[in-house]
Image (tube, rainbow, N blue to C red; front, side, top):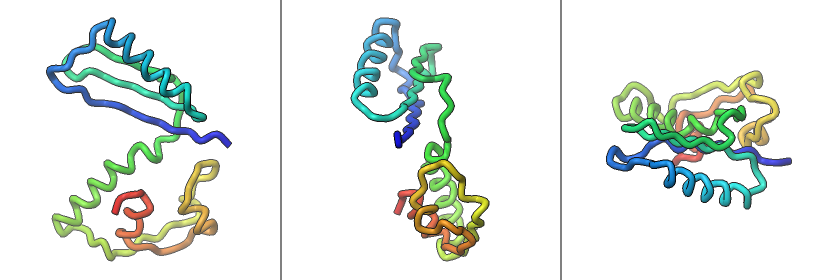
Length: 129
C-alpha cells in the first residue's frame, strides 16, 4: 500500500523573492526529490511579499489529518500554559471518530475506539512529547 504524504511549505522570508528562473530550478529540484520516493507528494510554496508561487500536484486531494497536528498541538499546549486545559484531563474517543481508510497507529492499537485517554497521551499520539 502506497503511503500518502502531504507537504505544505508555506513561508518564505520577506526579503526572499522567487524569480522565474529560481522557481524553475526549485521546481526541478523538488521533482527530483519526489521522484525518488514511493509516495504521492504535494508541495505548494507561496511567496508572502510577492505573487510568486510554486505548486506540484497542487490539484490533488490529500487527507489533511497530519498537516494540522503541529498547529493543534501548539494551540492545546498554549491553553495548558494559560491554565485553560490540563494535560491530565480525559478525552473520550468514539469508534466513529476513527476514520477509515487512513493510516492510524492509534486506530491500530484501539480498533474498537470508545476509549478514554489523557490530553497528554493524545499529544503523544500526535507525535509531540
